[in-house]
Amino acid sequence: MKNNAQHKTAIVVLAAGNSSRLGRPKQLLKYKESTLLKNTILEALKVENSFVIVVTGSNHNIIEKELNLPEITFTFNSEWENGMSSSIVKGILELLLLNPDCEQCILAVCDQPFVTSSVFENLILESHKNKKGIAASTYSETLGTPVLFQKKYFQELLELKGQEGAKKIIKKYIQDTVSVSFEKGNIDIDTEEDYSKLIDLRDKDSK
Image (cartoon, rainbow, N blue to C red):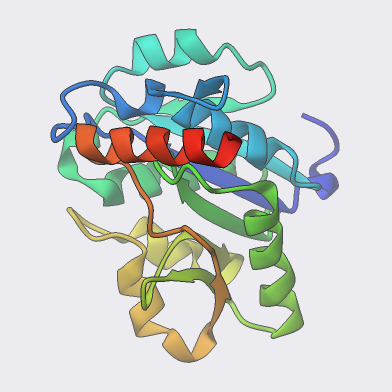
Protein backbone atom coordinates (compact mmCIF):
# COMPACT_ATOMS: atom_id res chain seq x y z
CA MET A 1 0.00 0.00 0.00
CA LYS A 2 1.17 3.51 -0.79
CA ASN A 3 1.72 6.15 1.84
CA ASN A 4 -1.06 5.91 4.45
CA ALA A 5 -1.73 9.63 4.24
CA GLN A 6 -3.03 9.03 0.74
CA HIS A 7 -5.56 6.52 2.02
CA LYS A 8 -8.01 8.69 3.88
CA THR A 9 -11.07 6.69 2.84
CA ALA A 10 -11.64 2.96 3.20
CA ILE A 11 -14.31 1.53 0.92
CA VAL A 12 -15.58 -1.67 2.52
CA VAL A 13 -17.56 -3.89 0.15
CA LEU A 14 -19.77 -6.32 2.06
CA ALA A 15 -19.91 -9.53 0.01
CA ALA A 16 -20.25 -12.30 2.58
CA GLY A 17 -23.88 -13.40 2.16
CA ASN A 18 -24.95 -16.72 0.70
CA SER A 19 -27.66 -15.29 -1.61
CA SER A 20 -30.21 -17.75 -0.20
CA ARG A 21 -33.14 -16.25 -2.15
CA LEU A 22 -31.21 -16.44 -5.41
CA GLY A 23 -29.80 -19.95 -5.03
CA ARG A 24 -26.38 -19.07 -6.48
CA PRO A 25 -23.70 -16.54 -5.46
CA LYS A 26 -25.04 -13.13 -6.48
CA GLN A 27 -21.51 -11.74 -6.18
CA LEU A 28 -20.59 -13.66 -9.35
CA LEU A 29 -23.63 -12.85 -11.49
CA LYS A 30 -22.46 -11.68 -14.90
CA TYR A 31 -22.87 -7.95 -15.39
CA LYS A 32 -21.20 -5.32 -17.62
CA GLU A 33 -18.43 -7.55 -19.00
CA SER A 34 -17.63 -8.72 -15.46
CA THR A 35 -19.70 -9.56 -12.37
CA LEU A 36 -21.85 -7.61 -9.92
CA LEU A 37 -19.14 -7.68 -7.27
CA LYS A 38 -16.29 -6.84 -9.64
CA ASN A 39 -18.27 -3.93 -11.06
CA THR A 40 -18.66 -2.48 -7.54
CA ILE A 41 -14.95 -2.99 -6.80
CA LEU A 42 -13.76 -1.45 -10.07
CA GLU A 43 -15.89 1.64 -9.40
CA ALA A 44 -14.52 1.84 -5.83
CA LEU A 45 -10.93 1.63 -7.11
CA LYS A 46 -11.46 4.82 -9.14
CA VAL A 47 -11.95 6.90 -5.98
CA GLU A 48 -8.87 8.95 -5.13
CA ASN A 49 -7.07 8.60 -1.77
CA SER A 50 -8.93 5.43 -0.95
CA PHE A 51 -8.30 1.74 -0.43
CA VAL A 52 -10.73 -1.12 -0.97
CA ILE A 53 -11.51 -3.99 1.39
CA VAL A 54 -13.82 -6.82 0.35
CA VAL A 55 -15.42 -8.83 3.15
CA THR A 56 -16.16 -12.38 2.00
CA GLY A 57 -17.94 -15.22 3.77
CA SER A 58 -20.03 -17.82 1.98
CA ASN A 59 -18.34 -19.07 -1.21
CA HIS A 60 -15.22 -17.06 -0.32
CA ASN A 61 -12.84 -19.41 -2.16
CA ILE A 62 -14.55 -19.10 -5.54
CA ILE A 63 -15.13 -15.37 -5.10
CA GLU A 64 -11.49 -14.60 -4.24
CA LYS A 65 -10.22 -16.81 -7.06
CA GLU A 66 -12.58 -15.23 -9.56
CA LEU A 67 -11.55 -11.69 -8.66
CA ASN A 68 -7.77 -12.00 -8.60
CA LEU A 69 -7.28 -8.24 -8.06
CA PRO A 70 -3.98 -7.52 -6.29
CA GLU A 71 -4.94 -3.93 -5.47
CA ILE A 72 -7.75 -4.91 -3.08
CA THR A 73 -7.63 -6.55 0.34
CA PHE A 74 -9.81 -9.55 1.05
CA THR A 75 -10.85 -10.33 4.59
CA PHE A 76 -12.78 -13.51 5.38
CA ASN A 77 -15.65 -13.25 7.85
CA SER A 78 -15.96 -16.71 9.38
CA GLU A 79 -19.08 -15.54 11.25
CA TRP A 80 -20.96 -14.40 8.14
CA GLU A 81 -24.01 -16.47 9.12
CA ASN A 82 -24.50 -14.17 12.12
CA GLY A 83 -25.73 -11.41 9.84
CA MET A 84 -24.62 -8.16 8.25
CA SER A 85 -23.19 -6.72 11.47
CA SER A 86 -20.42 -9.34 11.63
CA SER A 87 -19.22 -8.29 8.15
CA ILE A 88 -19.29 -4.60 9.07
CA VAL A 89 -17.24 -5.36 12.20
CA LYS A 90 -14.77 -7.45 10.19
CA GLY A 91 -14.36 -4.67 7.61
CA ILE A 92 -13.75 -1.96 10.24
CA LEU A 93 -11.20 -4.12 12.08
CA GLU A 94 -9.38 -4.74 8.81
CA LEU A 95 -9.27 -1.07 7.83
CA LEU A 96 -7.89 -0.12 11.28
CA LEU A 97 -5.23 -2.77 10.82
CA LEU A 98 -4.28 -1.51 7.36
CA ASN A 99 -4.44 2.18 8.20
CA PRO A 100 -5.10 3.26 11.81
CA ASP A 101 -5.16 6.88 10.57
CA CYS A 102 -8.05 6.24 8.18
CA GLU A 103 -10.44 9.21 8.41
CA GLN A 104 -13.64 7.69 7.09
CA CYS A 105 -15.12 4.58 5.58
CA ILE A 106 -17.80 3.90 3.03
CA LEU A 107 -19.85 0.73 3.47
CA ALA A 108 -21.06 -0.66 0.16
CA VAL A 109 -22.85 -3.85 -0.90
CA CYS A 110 -22.22 -5.90 -4.02
CA ASP A 111 -25.75 -6.06 -5.40
CA GLN A 112 -26.45 -2.43 -6.36
CA PRO A 113 -25.60 -2.63 -10.07
CA PHE A 114 -25.89 1.11 -10.67
CA VAL A 115 -23.26 2.13 -8.14
CA THR A 116 -20.47 4.24 -9.68
CA SER A 117 -17.34 5.98 -8.46
CA SER A 118 -19.28 9.27 -8.51
CA VAL A 119 -21.79 7.82 -6.00
CA PHE A 120 -18.86 7.21 -3.62
CA GLU A 121 -17.25 10.58 -4.40
CA ASN A 122 -20.51 12.45 -3.77
CA LEU A 123 -20.74 10.93 -0.28
CA ILE A 124 -17.21 12.17 0.53
CA LEU A 125 -17.92 15.59 -0.95
CA GLU A 126 -21.28 16.13 0.80
CA SER A 127 -19.99 14.90 4.16
CA HIS A 128 -17.19 17.48 4.09
CA LYS A 129 -19.23 20.26 2.57
CA ASN A 130 -21.99 19.91 5.16
CA LYS A 131 -19.62 19.05 8.02
CA LYS A 132 -21.62 15.90 8.79
CA GLY A 133 -20.21 12.71 10.27
CA ILE A 134 -22.47 10.47 8.16
CA ALA A 135 -23.41 10.69 4.47
CA ALA A 136 -26.06 8.18 3.39
CA SER A 137 -27.43 7.42 -0.04
CA THR A 138 -31.09 8.19 -0.50
CA TYR A 139 -33.53 6.39 -2.80
CA SER A 140 -37.15 5.22 -2.54
CA GLU A 141 -37.67 7.46 0.50
CA THR A 142 -35.07 5.59 2.52
CA LEU A 143 -31.47 6.12 3.60
CA GLY A 144 -29.09 3.28 2.87
CA THR A 145 -25.93 2.02 1.24
CA PRO A 146 -23.45 3.12 0.16
CA VAL A 147 -23.02 5.08 3.38
CA LEU A 148 -20.04 7.03 4.67
CA PHE A 149 -19.08 7.15 8.35
CA GLN A 150 -16.36 9.38 9.68
CA LYS A 151 -13.85 7.94 12.15
CA LYS A 152 -15.80 9.02 15.24
CA TYR A 153 -18.41 6.35 14.42
CA PHE A 154 -16.02 3.42 13.98
CA GLN A 155 -16.43 2.30 17.59
CA GLU A 156 -20.23 2.17 17.29
CA LEU A 157 -19.96 0.21 14.05
CA LEU A 158 -17.75 -2.29 15.88
CA GLU A 159 -20.50 -2.74 18.48
CA LEU A 160 -23.25 -3.75 16.01
CA LYS A 161 -24.76 -7.18 16.67
CA GLY A 162 -26.71 -9.82 14.71
CA GLN A 163 -28.87 -8.56 11.85
CA GLU A 164 -28.27 -4.91 12.75
CA GLY A 165 -26.89 -2.95 9.87
CA ALA A 166 -25.58 0.58 9.55
CA LYS A 167 -29.17 1.93 9.44
CA LYS A 168 -29.32 1.69 13.22
CA ILE A 169 -26.51 4.23 13.54
CA ILE A 170 -27.91 6.47 10.79
CA LYS A 171 -31.25 6.64 12.65
CA LYS A 172 -29.56 7.32 15.98
CA TYR A 173 -27.50 10.21 14.58
CA ILE A 174 -29.89 11.53 11.95
CA GLN A 175 -28.97 15.14 12.90
CA ASP A 176 -25.36 14.39 11.92
CA THR A 177 -26.40 12.76 8.61
CA VAL A 178 -26.53 14.30 5.16
CA SER A 179 -28.56 12.47 2.52
CA VAL A 180 -27.09 12.13 -0.95
CA SER A 181 -29.27 11.17 -3.90
CA PHE A 182 -28.38 7.88 -5.60
CA GLU A 183 -30.48 7.40 -8.72
CA LYS A 184 -31.45 3.73 -9.19
CA GLY A 185 -30.00 2.92 -5.76
CA ASN A 186 -33.25 1.11 -5.00
CA ILE A 187 -32.40 -1.54 -7.60
CA ASP A 188 -30.70 -4.47 -5.93
CA ILE A 189 -30.51 -8.13 -6.81
CA ASP A 190 -32.04 -10.67 -4.44
CA THR A 191 -33.87 -13.07 -6.76
CA GLU A 192 -33.65 -14.48 -10.29
CA GLU A 193 -36.53 -12.17 -11.20
CA ASP A 194 -34.51 -9.13 -10.05
CA TYR A 195 -31.58 -10.31 -12.16
CA SER A 196 -33.76 -10.87 -15.25
CA LYS A 197 -35.19 -7.35 -14.89
CA LEU A 198 -31.67 -5.94 -14.64
CA ILE A 199 -30.53 -7.69 -17.82
CA ASP A 200 -33.69 -6.50 -19.65
CA LEU A 201 -33.01 -2.96 -18.47
CA ARG A 202 -29.38 -3.15 -19.57
CA ASP A 203 -30.36 -4.48 -23.00
CA LYS A 204 -32.90 -1.67 -23.46
CA ASP A 205 -30.32 0.94 -22.45
CA SER A 206 -27.77 -0.39 -24.90
CA LYS A 207 -30.14 -0.24 -27.88
